[in-house]
Amino acid sequence: MRSRPTTLLLTTALVASLTACGSGDGGGPEPDGTTRLSLLLFGGAEEVAGYQAMLDEYEDATPDVEVELTPVGTQDDLLAKLATGFAGGIPPDVFLVNFRSFRQFADQGAIRPVQPFLDASEELSVEDFVEPPLEAFRVDGQLVCQPQNVSSLVVYYNRDLFEARDVPLPREGWTWDDFLATAEQLTGDGTYGLGTEPSLIRVAPFVWSNGGEVVDDHDAPTALALGDGPAREALDWFLDLSLVHGVVPPDVEEQSEDAESRFIAGRLGMYLNSRKSVPDLRTIDGFTWDVAPLPVAPGGAPVTMLHSDAYCIADGTGNEQAAWDLVEFAMGTRGQEILAASGRTVPSRRDVLTSPAFLSEDVPPASAEVFVDNAEIARATPSTASWRRVEKLADDILEQIFHGRIEREAGIARLLEETRDVFARAG
Image 1 (cartoon, rainbow, N blue to C red):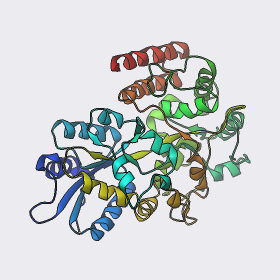
Image 2: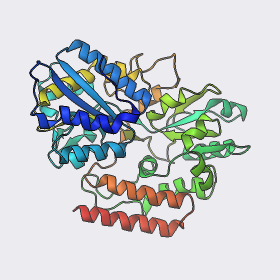
Image 3: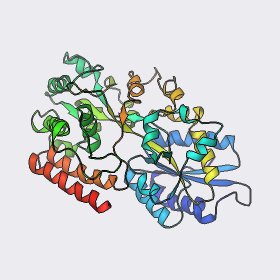
Image 4: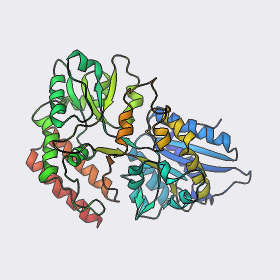
């Protein structure tokens, strides 16, 4: 049994694994005939356990390959480790990264595109997978990384609280007005109707549903497009949840307890997040919870925010083919079934997405089909090299507006101006 690095050993394990398995050793089998690969990713304990189970099965099937799994706690940690690894010439052979972050490495030529491997594969075909995450990881029509999940933004809700207050349960096609009325009915007596982070990826699907756009040009953005028209209308509607209607916890309470913890404690009626919350929410034993689709804008279309990570292969390690063989197994039916069992991953393979491995009746959410329905209506924000910097700045300003730390009009003007400067500096 291979060793499993613990959280306390993450930094040491990363340095050791990158040094042993990265491009610094020239790649290929070692003198004993073993090919050693490194896989870097971020995730919680349940998610990491799922990846380790998948790797254990892969190693059992390929005894001449050993894979060292190195998890980190946050996406920021992941990106920092990747930047350090590539700069030092010792990147991980394979790494899992979100579509909103991969371009900073792809544009530097640091990633070996998977398109030629996929085209030549006898195990995988592009038709096996849902389209939105594939498109999110394409550059100039070529698939750069292989997306392994197709999560989306959903409404988690406390079913028991709904029933106790005689509030109609969320349903497909419910409107913004329905959503707000529901949140208002669930607010009071120590609970709030809604918990959400104020960020671009939370605002975006409401903008799209209302017929607006987040940026001026998806492929080559130069500015956020939230200043007027349907996009501004959606932004104002989102901000009003806090500033006008008070259905979310105020700033001081949000600082003391985040939305997910508050939901788990039974003090939130609804909570917006992707599939990543499921492992933690499955620890709830005090009430029944479920998921629902996002509400639809008046006269608008149902849409949600894509949340997708992909396996990327570092270029120049000498282990690219072996790395693809690992990815090929991970993206096969069995590999995706193992990860689906962790609860965190919404499989990007069509056959597993609609199988009992994902749509289990034994564990919540009971309405997991919502993620299946969302798979084809999920949209992506841009994935340019500068996008993560834009997003971090925008999220900071949106949070200040949402909680009333800065005045709305002045804050939105600052949001548009300062992010435009980031776009401009990126060229």
